[in-house]
Image (tube, rainbow, N blue to C red; front, side, top):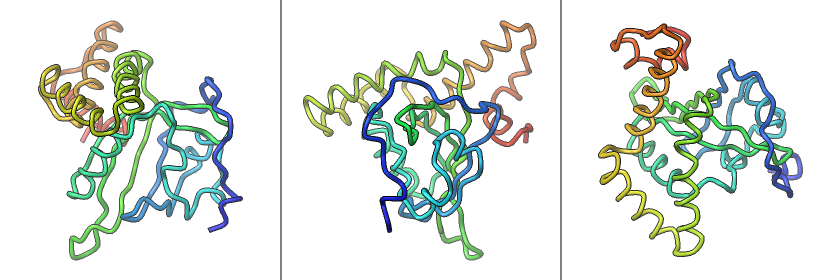
Length: 208
């Protein structure tokens, strides 16, 4: 692979990418995370074009503010062939950032064997970022000073002691709560049955 086509930025800029936040970013990878497909929204948010990213590892857009333990948990779930949700700060080609919530789906062949992953990502409200960013900052600082294992142990303890749920459940619950809060503030609260399905609506455009 000619990595000169898709260089990671050498300078990190504390500035958010301007992109159409109503769009859904979609990418498909093989089982190792190599990008096989990306839609135009992915290009707009990441500031890379298809020629630059197809055939590259998905972690090319990993932002240095992201703790490694989040991706360790993500890959652990995917390797167990479980669908997964995550909140991620991504790095653009110019060194800027964009926050998204991601729905990872395991793709299978006609025999049910896993062949790769489809990721659907959408922008999230600032209220969710304000809640998750301090946790990520703590995890990253522990990782940098005490090592990845210490960060992982703290993360496990945090999920058990403070939220009493898995990371995937934590992300879904956080998103659902913020959607409900926003709906109540707008005096347009939806029935609970719909709120529980809000991620399906969020990524696919309708309640299922």
